[in-house]
Image 1 (tube, rainbow, N blue to C red):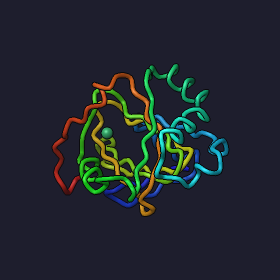
Image 2 (image 1 turned 180 degrees about the vertical axis):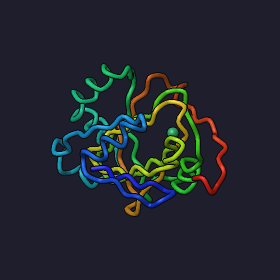
Image 3 (image 1 turned 135 degrees about the horizontal axis):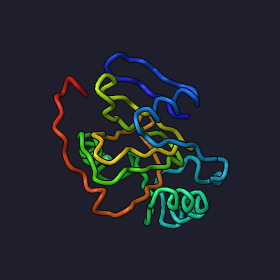
Image 4 (image 1 turned 60 degrees about the vertical axis):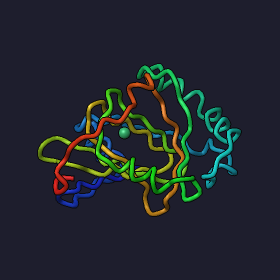
Length: 179
Ligand SMILES: [Fe+2]
């Protein structure tokens, strides 16, 4: 279950009800999916073949189609990041820049962990959404954010798209001390 960490005061928000309430207030879509569906051989696998990726999409097919129908996504794929990923350091440098998109950015974490750092409303400022397997998140369109790995440095996520153009990252200028 995701944990929220507000960056300017260190406040931690945890527990299903509190996390849901906080994210709803910030306009961030969040839900939980059943991770028990994932076959054992994929639970701790982060260097994925095309067959592995296809299997993950098949396992979650009904959930993905339901989410796509509810929220208007038309394409989906699987992304895996770990120290085995070529150019992982360069990729992370890119992911760690504050940016926006014209569409929302949705991720279903199926293994490992990841953090979205999202700009909240005025008083809240930036907050971490620390994600684990089963967490489904959508950062709203035009909302400044960035992504990075957690201490385990590995994640597998399903991405859904309305339009690939909508997911182009637009850099967002932010003062360092406000992030
Ligand atoms: Fe993004």
